[in-house]
Length: 124
Image (cartoon, rainbow, N blue to C red; front, side, top):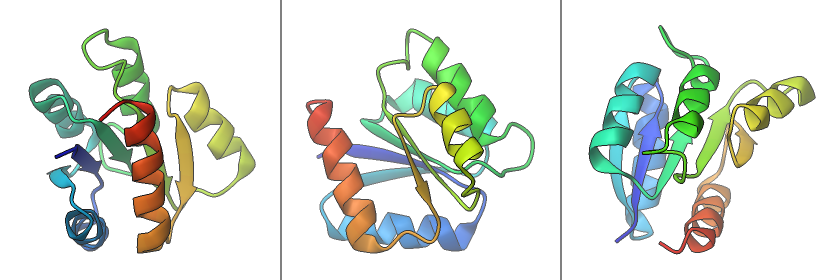
């Protein structure tokens, strides 16, 4: 079963994403900020990371950059899922190492389709 790490400081967003993924056969892990997301990624080596941008402390752009530069986590695809919908935000997220960028709200069908796309690309 593929393992997806959700990094988001909104308990509601986490719950919605977690339930959608679980209903579709994915195992989930959760972290409430960038720092704990990094720790979870290093400790559990998820197959995919769904990363919010606006979080206290280390934001999603910073966390994604650290993950992309760390040889231990660089191969884990990061999909940013955020309310920051400007083209410049998307470009910046992809420059930090994200493989994709979705703007909230994201429906269950779109979320699951994106997870499948990146998990199949990574061989999970």
